[in-house]
Length: 272
Image 1 (tube, rainbow, N blue to C red):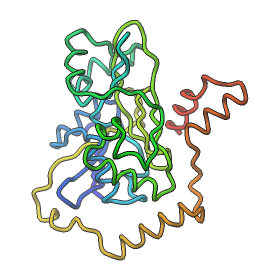
Image 2: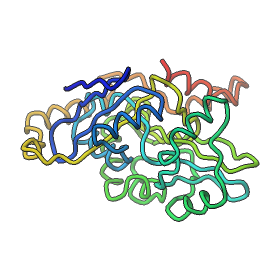
Image 3: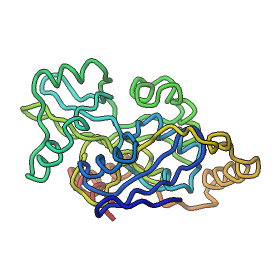
Image 4: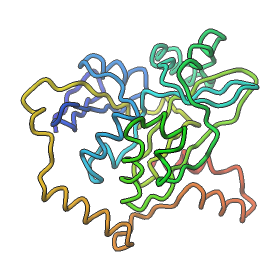
């Protein structure tokens, strides 16, 4: 693993084999994106992120830690909530991050809304079963051709459903950066908080590998067998990964008459 320092932030290059290299930086979004771009990385997409999780395995940093991704969630009054690949926040990184520093959302004008709606899927569910990734419109859009395989990958680690966290719609359209949580957190889509200011929230980038290392991306048969054995142990309960689904959290809060606290709890857990 290589470490490069840009200003006060470190670029951690942790995926160094295969045709797709990856690195991350823990910094506010505007600074982190600049660090990535200075080293020829672009922000990772959900499809690229899950592909590298499958390639690197459960114990790799890319699986053990969450990160910001290319996709954004937009909230449009009278129209709905949408997941989009249009990089509207990335293209306005300084403005969007500064808006949050000032305690405000990054609001969209009419042209920006219409641009985002040209490439999107409506976020209509809060949970997607992992055995249904190949049929669900949200996961098909988010994960593309890898959707079904990623569902099987998650199910192999005892994850039965993927949570989708959403914010409420307001009187003006706004955008939130999507956070892709770690596997132990259900590996869901965090479309609600979209924190851009935190130093501890990572931005992950990718770039194509043109070097010789691209020829050595395949894990050994023993590494693959070890990963399968670990997945089987987790699924059978022999390894306790201490995970609770957002649905369990919601049900418990409702039972205790504490509904409405789930977003605060999940945000706090992310910052631990």
